[in-house]
Length: 282
Length: 322
Image (cartoon, rainbow over all chains, first blue to last red; front, side, top):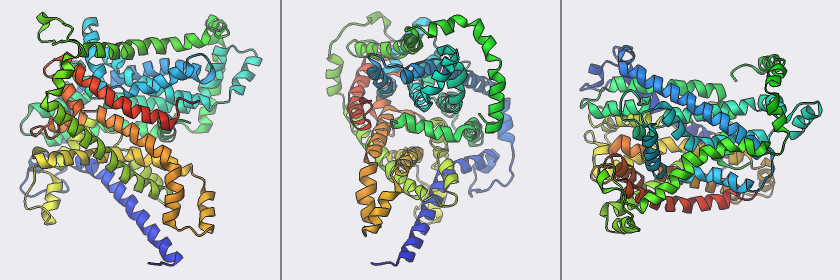
């Protein structure tokens, strides 16, 4: 079949539009439906005739969630653990990433590849020994214990991302600062870090999202409600009730993705760039 | 990081003017930074942390796979059993089923999102109006907690209140509501649908970056030579995108083989053993029965599988060459 140039162009444009519309709907439909469900009373969720839009929209579910004592604990735990993980990964990761970016030393390549290989280890393989170590050190059911466990998979990624951002900053700038009398540490603090700030922010955001979302370690390393994280609490909420409180669950889902959306809006551009760096070299 | 560039500059220069005094307090850091120990000092915290949280656990995990160790039977201690647990694996029907399910799950949970992601990346590359918005929106499924994603789909596919069931019945495609996750024949496909939803943004984004790095001139030159769109795709896009494709696929395969999240949240490996994959088996053995020795042996088998994909990744990504 031969199509004229203009007809082909029009066909392509229509196809592109169709694909993008489909992608948008497919990505967002579950979210929109969850949002709608969170605004329904339970009696409107369980009906003979499906209600597409809530007939009596209400924020009841959100209020009820908020009033549950466990909610505040779970949410608080997640926030503290996320902050601890991000701080740990940024402090240690920045330092290592700078050394990898600026120095050439024996074993550098091996170490870099090693850092990358770490994320190929089965999580379950780490899970068991880490459980034993944490039990022996009394770190089970503690926030710092979980934050430490999260660094197993987040520190290597953070380091690689940060190294990519440091590589993009010309060493000449540091050299200039050092000729002006700054020490190397001074040049790092005054020249490199400010220039790398968007990259550091993106790394922080990515680390924060991953720590906020983590489920497997949190499930294994916590045994009581006081120390559980938000995703684990949400999961166990399903386990213990026969008639699922869908309105409540949906409200919980929506609340837990709000911080992610905020993070995302804050650092979208450098986040995408950083992700590329972590995944494909260069 | 949220402030406009102009604000950031003035904020930073404000901070900078305070830094010299601060640095004098830590002048010794500056002096050490001029010595040849500095690089090692900067690497030290990272290596210490990695040794404690990664190397030690991995080695001790492999060690455990050679020992019998059940947390619930402390009296039996940790006797060395050599390869016995691996030999037990060979006779374990659950293991073979899990292996088969892992292959099934691994292949389709990578290929489906890859194909959809490729189509979307090609569409996004055409930079029509609204493409930027779509590019941002489709990232949401990827950045969602697996628990929330699981619940969303459990609700959508619920056997009594699922909206997808309702739509399918209204369209006449389904006679009555279908319990997707509770039936052997549809449990894995339903999980694969959730996996497709979670996985396609990763591929779309990565492949888009790859597409954008292919120079436009090549396409123009080929068009001048009379190549049509299909042959341009076959002879320019595919070969130049191939490294990115292989890297994306191996990375995703590793992630998918590694993670039992969806099975824990949605099916518990069931119904029967329909969604019982290796990562779930290992997790369940450790989490529910506390048979750490056997769970470690299962993880070591997974390690072998993952190393295989890692080697492919290293070859293609060329990270070992600098």
